[in-house]
Image (cartoon, rainbow, N blue to C red; front, side, top):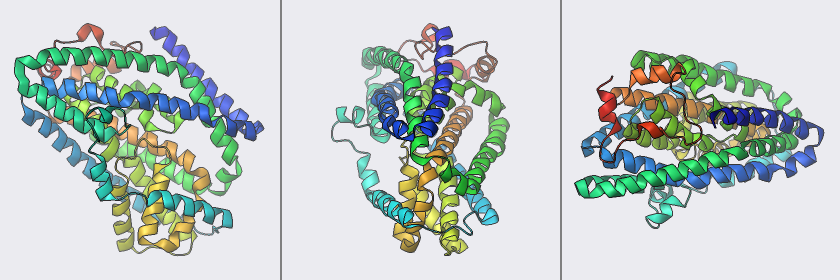
Length: 444
């Protein structure tokens, strides 16, 4: 089955190239193919809730001390805040230096598009976001599509099983079997990836064409370069200093996930696979199960860079540059407002428009300048967010002593390949009630 999956991802690459061709040659046909990409993303989202639930229940329910879970969560959130701040400052620096919006002009079409995005961005606020974490029922958390709702219910279930002691072991065993079933379903869904990638790429190319890219090449290139430098220099340095892991080896290990994100423009499609791959790499179930889902809502490095540079771009393009104090206040608001939207394609654009509407309404029209290329920038956002969460999981595992560096070396060297058929280490499954971190800690 592993050999067959190699052909699957070659097919994804071929589908992306074919989608680009169709979008350019037959743009109307390309736009009609959008449901193929939408349907594939929906299939992935269908299993995210159950996967998060199973992973966290197994990780939290099997750990011996509840304080360990709190330690993992606290370290993760502290790191997320620090790294998002660094990303914000880098975006501010680059945006102020290159001033990419100078000389551009708004059009009526751009104004209309901006009004629509502002309406989307102003639909929610922080209170609604916090209340939205609480599901209507325990079971609805697994079906609503909300990562944070699934996270909350899974944590409660994990702590409850932990408090049950030996009586909770049969429940953990049942959750283990459910996890195997859901991962097997996910492996089956992945065979539809070429079709989804073809439809998604054909639709966006057919809708925007090449003209949108030409007129806004500066902001796109600057954004991509900034994201690459952030991942390579900032994340790479921190990963090596803390965990002694080479960033490029880690990114190569996650190559198939990056390809999946690139073709769908949504990091959420790779969330279940990231959890499985981090556990296979040597991170304990507890750390992977808490850090990855939480990071998808709170560790938005790519989104922070995007919001910063896009805001400065719009302010410059509309002839209303922002003072430094205004820049910081507006962008802090946007960074908070964007929490929970990491995996949603286009959420960054709505957050940008909503933030401008709330703080500087006269700049909202400028959002229309980047509507045409937001999909392409969305890919860079998603890839950067994903890389940041992968690095964060390794770092938190190292800080808590629940990262097996020896195993990671074997995995990254190709000596312990990831099982693409089941997404689980079947031969290394442990009995419920034992934390995989206990075994791993003895080897660090």
